[in-house]
Amino acid sequence: MHRRDLLRAAALFPAAAWLPRVGTAAARGADVPLPRHFSDDEAYWAEIRRQFLIADGIFMNTGTWGALPVPVLEALEAHMRAFETVFHQTPFDVHALRAQLATLVGAPPETLAFTRNTTEGMNVVARGLDFQPGDEILLTTQEHVGGRCCWELVAARHGLVLRQFPPPVPAPSEDALFEAWTSQVGPRTRVLSIQHVFFSTGAIQPVQRLAAWARERGIITVVDGAHPPGMLAVDIQSLGCDFYASSPHKWLLAPKGSGFLYIGPDWIDRLWPLIASGGWDELALKGDRFDHVGTRNDSLLVGFQASVGFHNAIGTARVERRCRGLATRLDAGLRAQPGVRVVSPAAPEVRSAMVSFQVDGVTGADVVQRLWKMGPVRVRLVGENNLGYVRLSTHVYNTPDEVDRVVGMIGEIASAAK
Ligand SMILES: Cc1ncc(COP(=O)(O)O)c(C=O)c1O
Image (tube, rainbow, N blue to C red; front, side, top):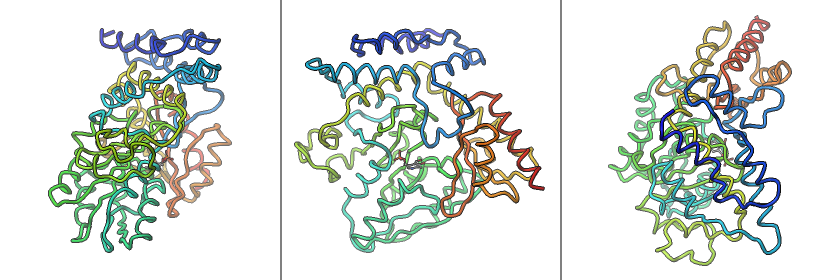
């Protein structure tokens, strides 16, 4: 085990530095066993898996929401208990969390604001920019409602044009995705609204190239980054986009209601806040200006901080290797099943930890139901725009054995349909 890993692991529970030592919840938190194996072997991952509350079945829907590690749940619970103990209301240092998150996602702390989720972050951006009638917003036909409806609203209100184009599916390469975007840009295009990772197929988009290309032409890039933090290494500054909205409650395994928004340095003093409260016009506050949204639940932020600690204790590179490694196994297994058509990219650099597929002669909804009955396996139907894909997500709590079992079940469903 490397010294850095040891330090990270040690940082997990002495997170107890911020845990108020009251009641049984905190005590239970300190009892949760730390991983003792530190190589990438299955024994290590089995210890990681034991940090979760896993009952029956196979959970492969992290793309919708992740499972909370027990230490995160304990931290949240302990803070809430302390806070609600009359007169013990424990303050929470939001700036410490901002700094930790900034390191994790590669952004200056003052460019980050806390939101509830990606939907809120995307709305803060769309509602906070100034537009002229006829300005065009470019996006694909495979956007999630959480990244699309904010544009529909401002388009309806301010006479903007939403231009949607079908992305290549399966995405053959980064180049193909880049060309799909750039060939659609017109003289009135003001914004590219780009999913970093498609919710529908898991394809990873070339955000860095697109942002650089757009910047040269004075076009704003708004990234719907619901998925990458906690799944892939993310360095927002080097991506060079103007805005990045995310939902750490998915892959970063933070409590539901944890979100963040990156507001690039060109915009931090110019974007109109969606919610105005004290300090809304104090530009010196930077990202904080967008956090004055009234009373909020600090216990969620404590949990968010614990999830950053949990992630760092494993290490971003190792998390990414595991999540994507399991997805590669899943992808290969599915491709070997007659009657199964994978719609996620075959190219490893474009494939994330979400794999989507269709089964010949069986609707996506039926596949989802059958998996639920057979497993139960919890997956996501991508029913939007009648796509009818079935999406599987692989995270650190999944195992190679689960992947193989799910592939076997899908093979059975496909062969029964012949
Ligand atoms: C690409 C994408 N954008 C936005 C969202 C909305 O996320 P949230 O509900 O956390 O706002 C999702 C949710 O699954 C998503 O996959």
